[in-house]
Length: 360
Ligand SMILES: Cc1ncc(COP(=O)(O)O)c(C=O)c1O
Image (cartoon, rainbow, N blue to C red; front, side, top):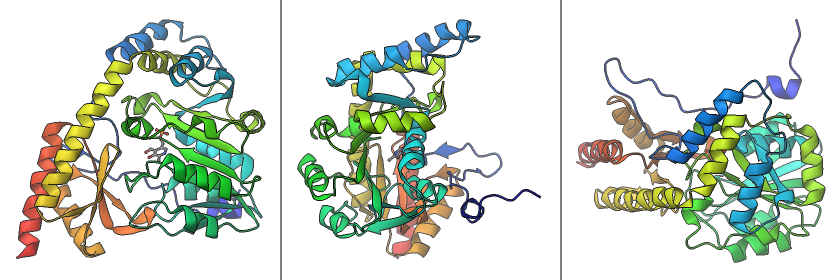
């Protein structure tokens, strides 16, 4: 029998949300940080129009989408690579720069996929302590080893929802050795754009990549479109390991139309931000510890792992799915995506009942 490579055989499959509502109960998913509303109607229209030429391969250079992204963000289209979601780009970066004898470093409560891609590449995965669930630049710099090749920082972080400043990112870049590739994953960047300076210019002349996605603020997770700004010496190498034709033609068309409809995306961010702040306040008033968040989700910290498990079970019994965070080193936490108002209120009300039952 064919056996997998040893480093693959000993990996666990990437843990996606486990959602099985009790029979007869509608499922409420607040577990995958998808947008509380769908894509711009213009994106749907653009995708539908492309279905008629589906016999042709998509543009392998994503030219129209790249040009629209470049114009919007004031960056060079040549530096942009697109992926089938930013997961695709994260995996391609690891495939290119991580491997045996090289280590990948990330904050302790980082997005678990960073660990997965290190394992896929047979590289060591190191973590740096965080301070109150915020990435800590000094700890990251102290954790660099002679074989550190790649540093991933999601900013804002998932599952923490917290953010570090542009100055901190600059300090991180300056403190890292020049030969270390720094990947700043801004999957939730649009939610934070109104107060965080975009950090595109960190990419110029350094080993730095900035990633974004259409899956969150643009409400397009099902289309699978991610993108990033890369310096040329990095993008030239990453392109070699990418699947050609990785983003379907309807997805490219939808993404371009969505990028051109900024008003819709900004409205989604505003609705989400208002509901997120109300949710955090309501949960704190009910006695929960909830981290501040600049994203479309909030992280609830319980006193113990068993308390998080009990609250999760109580929600699941009603068909409401949040997400446990053992994979991010936070077994005592539950992450709640800010979903549509009705579903979000159902979760708040269930959590409040759980709290009453357990604080007596
Ligand atoms: C921090 C972070 N990066 C990347 C992704 C991947 O997003 P996608 O592949 O849908 O673009 C996610 C999705 O949850 C995320 O939270």
